[in-house]
Amino acid sequence: PPEQPARGLRLVITAGPTREAIDPVRYLSNHSSGRMGYALAAAGVALGAEVTLISGPVALATPAGATRVDVESASEMLAAAEAHADGADIFIGCAAVADYRAASAAEHKLKKGDDDAGMTLRLVRNPDIIATIAARADRPFIIGFAAETQDVERYARDKLARKRLDMVAANDVSQPGLGFGSENNAALLLWQHGDEVDQCHLPPQPKADLAEAILRQALTCLTPTTPE
Ligand code: C5P
Image 1 (spheres, rainbow, N blue to C red):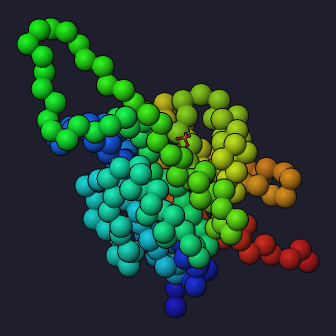
Image 2 (cartoon, rainbow, N blue to C red):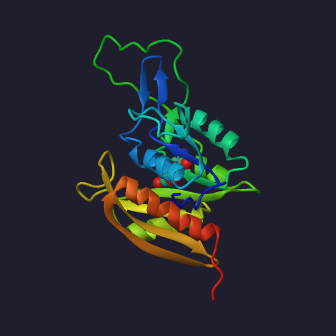
Image 3 (cartoon, rainbow, N blue to C red):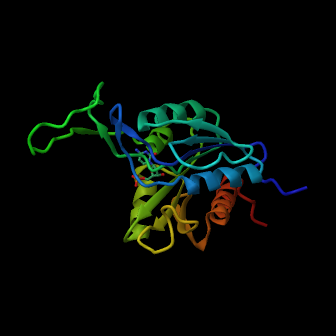
């Protein structure tokens, strides 16, 4: 039988972009394809975990064996994350959550003026989903993602500490052929090891392989082997 080191574990993953309504026909969003989160869900199922995939709007098929919960806005994603994080063993925040939403979504379609004047849209901050889960007393092992264009290690260490995460997978999104929308990705993986931060480089590889490598490292952190 295939080796299933995550058997019996509950894994909750947020994936894809969020969509923040401006009015009934318009929204704010970003370019996340959802591929990395979906690859993590598929890898989790393959390793034997019970997987809940909380997904923003993406054009991807649900990985076989995963339970998908569709959401649109960051507020909806937070509500789903809070509901499903109860009793979870691992929580992975892979979604590209919009940092801001319209202060109030208009009930009817906004009309342009008769002149060439611009318009001002007031934005307010969205909740930080992964930090909210991390602030819980009985929290799962928490893995965050960091997309950076410079000083990857410094920003990743900062994110690990500031959001109180257990592990961060950081990638340099300025590298051609990696990250957003592409099939391949590379990551610098950092994790809390007592008071220290351990790290390893995961070289460019298909997102499916990278997802499995990240999960295997997390499982090692969850079940530390006793030294001989
Ligand atoms: O702060 P930044 O967006 O760079 O952090 C990225 C990490 O935080 C990702 O794991 C992302 O899913 C998570 N995040 C979140 N809620 C937000 C913003 C980011 O869960 N509002």
